[in-house]
Image (cartoon, rainbow, N blue to C red):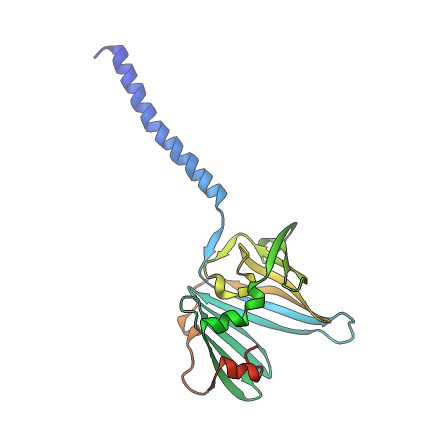
Length: 232
């Protein structure tokens, strides 16, 4: 082989080694830069809430709600000293169980997928429009979005695009948001309810959190519970 032919072959070989490396680096950087969102499927979150009226005539009522998510399973807990409620939902089967303790009564309500959709019809009809306003909540940059209900009323929602929940059924209100909600505010009549995250844990949730009790509860259907205002 002549020296010119050898140089050409050698240069060609070097280029063929370098070009793939450049392409890998380029696409690797492009991918990491354009997709920074972290998907979460196992987590728990606690929101502290404050209920106040517009007149300021009474002292605000405070409390907290907790949500636990593990894959397709979710559990929503709320309550106070005289009342507690838990909603356990399986997004795969659509089956739901509501556990309530009211004035010493322990009630278990089973819902079908149709019952679940009926109960959350208003929440699933929410539409969102993002604004340019942002703020940091619990260490995450959040975007302010405006939620609009079917009747035209609006409320503010702050969500982070850094976290994406695989199980969007965990909270039907925010099914159409591309991120995790860390703060929101709802107005109901003369009352304003503000929810702000107080704890966010991305560690695995124990499966026992989603166990359904086999005894100790009076069981009723969704239709029966609606007549008694239990499925609210």
